[in-house]
Structure formats: structure tokens, C-alpha cells
Amino acid sequence: MRFRSSKVNEFRLWGLGMTMGGMLLMIIGLAGIVFDWGKAGRIIAVVFMIIGMISMMVSMGIYFWAGMLSTSATVIDCPECGRRTKMLGKTDRCMFCKTILTVDPQYEPTAENETAATQTVQLELDRAHEHKPH
Ligand SMILES: [Zn+2]
Image (cartoon, rainbow, N blue to C red; front, side, top):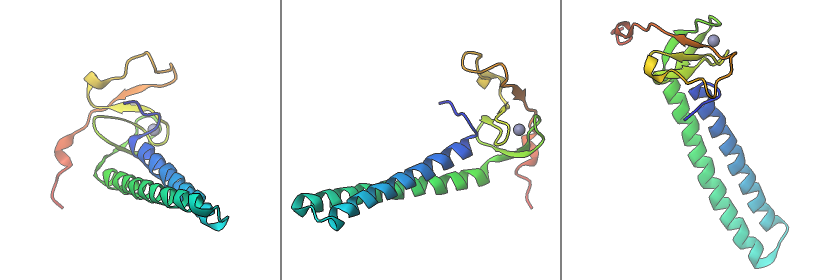
């Protein structure tokens, strides 16, 4: 799977977009009641409301899941822009400058989809200090 921005941002974007979509579906469903299209309108309303509700709940779940992920993500200082970013897994992109950050050479992105402007930065992560008890 390829991500254009950092994974946390990507999940948030999808969660938010799907919440909006769910809301829109529910509004369309409401229109079926408001404009009184008879029996068909009511059926459409119910169907759209249910679909909208489910997609809203799913997307809110994704949104909160992204929030949880971001708290468990590795916090590092981006070597490119110097800002503090969160990294999920072994390869992720910087939240700010979209630089690919990786700790494993195996996952280094191939040149096929990457533009010359996108740089890959190898990180030397010292994982030993991460689980230090407070
Ligand atoms: Zn950066």
C-alpha cells in the first residue's frame, strides 16, 4: 500500500471524508421524508439513513483508531525539515515535508513511483530507549 502523506494523516483524512459522506447520505435520506415522496420516499429515507449511520460509525471508528495509532507511533525528529513527526511501522512519511522515513533498508521505496524530489532518509533509531519506564 502506498501513502502520499504520513499514515496517521491519511487515516484521519479517510475517517473525516467518510464521516462527511455518511452525513450527506443521511441528509439525502431526510429529504425523502421532508419532500413527501410517498412510500418510495420513505423506503429510500430509511435505507439512506441506515447506510449513512453505518458509514458514519465506521468512519468515526477509523478516525479514533488513527488517533490511538498516533499515540503509539514512534516520535522522531525529521532529518529533512527538523520537525517532530510520528512514524507508523518501519516506513512512513514525514507529516510536514512528506519525506519517506525508513529504518529498514529492505522497505526502501523503489524508484518507479518516486519523483527525484522525494528523498529517502535512512534513520538510525535506537529502539532501546523507547520503553524506558517513567
Ligand atoms: Zn520532515
